[in-house]
Image 1 (tube, rainbow, N blue to C red):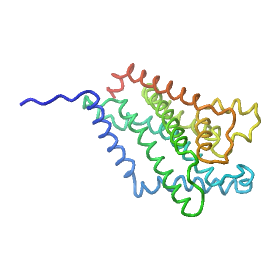
Image 2: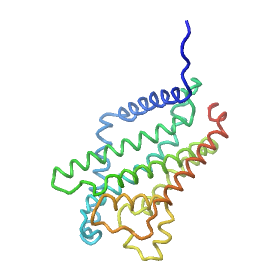
Image 3: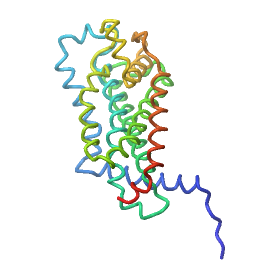
Image 4: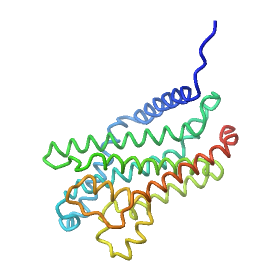
Length: 262
C-alpha cells in the first residue's frame, strides 16, 4: 500500500495548526478563568490610568475619548510586547516536541507570536463592542489602517521574539533583561499621551522607537479627530519589522542544532 507524500508546505501548515491549538488551550486554561483575565487585564489597566490622569484627560486629546485613547494605546502596545516577550520562552516550553522531526524551534516562536496577536485583536474587538454598548464612539474611522498598524506591531514583536528566543538560549540572562526593558519602553512609546504634546526636537528622538510609529498610526486610523505627529512613518516600522524577522530567521538557521539539542 502506497501513500501520497505530503509537500513541505503542507507539513509545515499542519505543524503550525497543531502548535496553535496546543498554545491556545495552554494560554486559555493556564489557570482558573484565565480566559476572563485576558479581558479584565486591559480593562483594569485602562481604568487605573484613567484614575491617575483624570485631572488632565480633557486636555490631552481634544475631541477623542480619553478612555478609548488609552484602550487603543494599551492594546496596541500589548500586541507588540506580548508577541515579543512571550515568544522568548516558546522554545523552552515546547522542547519536548522537538523529538518529532517535523517540529522546529522557529515554528513554536512564530505560532506563539501569531496567537498573542490574535488574542489581543479579539480583546480589542470585545472592548470596542462593550464601549459601543455604553454609548462611546468606538467604531474605527479607518478599519484597514487599524488592521495594518496592528499587523506591523505584531510583525515587529514576532521578529524581536525570533531574535531574543535564540539570544535567550545562548545567554539565559538575555530573556530577563529584555522583559525588564519593556517597562521603560512602555513609557517611551506614547501609550499614555499623544506625541504631539512633546516639543519638536524631543519628537525627533521619540520616533526613533519603531513601536511609537505603530501606536501613532493605530490611533490615527482609529480616531477621525486625532491629529498624528508629522514624524509618523509606517515604512520605518515596516523596515524594522522585516529586518527583525529576517535576522531572527537567520539566527534560527545558524543555531538550529543547538536549539534542537535542548
